[in-house]
Image (cartoon, rainbow, N blue to C red; front, side):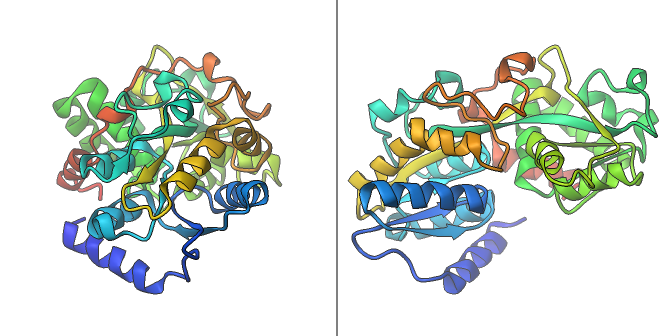
Length: 331
């Protein structure tokens, strides 16, 4: 995935984008769930009268577009699914500092020390497994075990997606380059690749693979609906602060290019405030509310019950991960 390719995609998205907000409104570049972002925008507009236009894309695509546009970007705010994209924009020095009172909404473990962006939501890594194909005592103790020969052809993942690449970023930060590169070789040999997390989950449910490594909201979202893509599955959380128990932080930041930075700061304060986090809790994204003391959706196990590793979201390295995954032939 070259810079030229990403820049071309960014330009294509720019040309195809809908009309932006008027001068007195806000434009949000987002890779978050469309419905969730729209709910936040509608509630913010109802409260403040400030219109909000939304432009949707993937984490890496939107981050690269912001970097390409620089200080000429029409965007006021950037919302992501995973933190590596936030760091791409921060490293390009394109964020304004988040207002201190907004930073205070989110616990320190869910935001970078720089204060240039903040956490707005979180999701957990987990393994779903088909109970007709694998027993509980056969489950891997660590995510790293999935690279062992006995797991060849037995699990699925969506390695090309930003979600999975964030998991690899956490592995890189926790275990280093050599161990990550070796695990990716095992991934290439063992895992059946899917186009997305939902497809990987469904593949496990129909027996194409015995298990799939995904984020939590795909499973819990399906369970809250018909359950037809997860009815044969159970959930396995890795313990002992394993890389496979990584909690990924979704970020939000105000861009230096904003023509209305005061309103943009208001929007970020709203998203991380009690009203915005309640929208997250009560909606259908099944991500974790993490700010302003709002408890997550009751269908989700508490984050405190998941033995997740300590990972500073500002240290996740998306560029090295792409290089390692490319070298391993995974993407």
